[in-house]
Image (cartoon, rainbow, N blue to C red; front, top):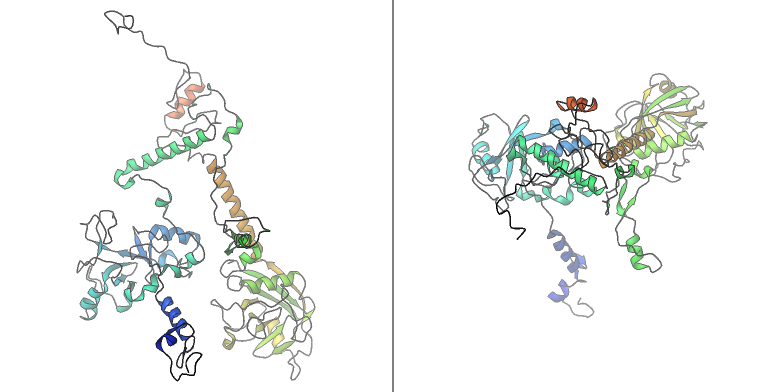
Amino acid sequence: MGKGTDKLYITHSEWSSGDAHSASVGYNAGSRAANRAGAAGASFKRLPFNFCAASLQPFKNPVCTASGTIFDVEVISAWLAKHGTNPINGEPLSAKDLIKLNFARNADASTSHNGAPTDGKGDYIDPVSFKVFTDNTHIVAVRHGNYANVFAWDTVERMNIKAKMWRDLVDDEEFSRRDIITLQDPQNAASRDLSQFKHLQDGEDATLPPSESESTTINTAALGRIGEKVLKAREAVERARASRLAGGDVNRTTSALTKTTSTSNAARAPAIAEKKLAPNAAAYTTGRAAASFTSTGLTPSTSGERALLTDEEWMLKPKRVKTTGYARIETNIGDLTLELYPEHAPKAVWNFIRLAQSGYYRSVAFHRSIRNFMIQGGDPTGTGRGGKSIWGNNFNDELEGPLTHDGRGVVSMANKGKNTNSSQFFITYRAAKHLDRKHTIFGRVVEGLETTLKKMEESAVEEGSNRPVRDIVIKDVVVYVDPFEEFLKDKKEKERKEEVKKEVMRRGGTEDDRTTWTGKRIRGAGDKDGGTAGGVGKYLATATKDGGGDVDVDGGVETWEEQPKKKVKTGGFGNFDGW
């Protein structure tokens, strides 16, 4: 029984070693127990309760979802405008689903519970017991429509649930148990585990609010309206500094000064270019660093550069291409118009469209038809055992999403088991719920249900094989709207607009960007005329053009000529220079 011996017992050290054997656990019990203990005790990063889940920064104007995830309203608004999903789990989310949170503050603390400086309004507290919230407090919100008041769970449990008094302790509004939203539960720390946040798993950076995207130390809230003027003046200084670095003359105010070369207005590339993550970057690297480290025949590489996906690989992700596609199946007994759903089954739609465009389905017959069930086709051999996908081999199922076999005219991929999709597809004659989560749904018949599809169902079939007696042949499949081409067009147009916008900003911005809050125009090195933003300045400019005197429009120096010096009074002892 002992290890390597004929002993009838084992010692404790033998049992707890890495290669130990246990009758109840099995071989290698010690090391597996250590692995489980290590996994259970593994540290993870938990998001503090007063931090926005998208920016990972303390929130200022908190809102939450119905599931209790807290965001800053500025951050989540910017995210929704770009993505329209919940950054934590990737589910659809809109602004109307957000709930404003009303936190109580004690307004008497200059530091938070963990010693960090605060905004001077104090710690977040329970409005009834005045207990300060920490990362170990069970915090809930009582919802009333589009807003909610925040309490400690102990308070709600003791004064509302146990007392059966279903009125808000702050504003006396009625509520029910389902209106209680858990914001933080110390017993469920995994709900605030940063490693489970989808936008971080996908490689997205933490989204900062617009106010924090610019590094500034100016307290605009304290300065009021003057703060905006100070910020605009600071922006003007930054643009002037950029113009100076580009070789321009920032002091030139009239045409009397020396003209600069036309190349001075060209954008100067920064010495160290920022490397932004490409939209089509993969979740893995190119592997060059590892390959060069282990092979002397490769050039050494020290950067973990992300691999880039092709347009096809990048598009064939669920919920990326949301444009609906349309195609028409032309048969010898009529036509069927299909609506295709690349949002939920991008690979199946891509496969069907590319096969159709290559003429793969021409002269292919529907080889199987079962009344009150479905009709199947797409096999060039006509046996039901052939067919290849556009990639040459089978591709995986796409079963996630809301699509089900809920009625007549649903178009799905035929297969011979899990992840064995090729070119064959079928169209249902009626609902077939037993096929849900087994076959990939990628379209639906929107025209021809009561004409062509009815003729197909009523066609006579052979006994045993269910093959139509009179062949139902696909003449051609015409693609009306290719959603992937539309997606690529929109993507290229957005990239072009972004490039134009970046080029404009590199050259100093638009006219509005080059105008200060006083109406004064900040001119670049290549500008010839002054120009004003309106007001009195336009009359001064007109007077200058008409020759009505030398008027300094921009309030700067007219020429570089030195002003005549004032005569120094003589007499007396003077300054003793002649002594």
